[in-house]
Length: 156
Picture 1 (cartoon, rainbow, N blue to C red):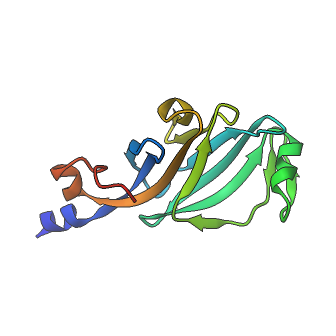
Picture 2 (cartoon, rainbow, N blue to C red):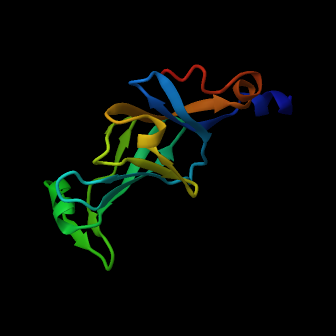
């Protein structure tokens, strides 16, 4: 009986899908404590912008924080939030929010990257210039992982 429960338990899986090319770029099991970071260069003011998320259950991402390397970029996003200067970055005090998916238009200017568990994926290299990339969480059971490619069916 215990074996049946183990194969039915699902874990959150981070899926990154290049919607322009119609292919999965990344499929990675993550823990509830995993920080997923979207990093990109601000197109007008330069400097990296970092948005941090954590899994909320098996299928939602909760935004925890947003920061920018320079004050002008932070102010750009702070139309309803304060900007807090730290010794190295400018924190945009955005409200915590949850998302079923995050859609990004990847391009050379933004040079978008996705970080998690000490790994960084260059979304520009993984997808292509001006590609639409979507990342989201999807529950995957142990049985699904054992019987097939866990991302074959991840069309969303």
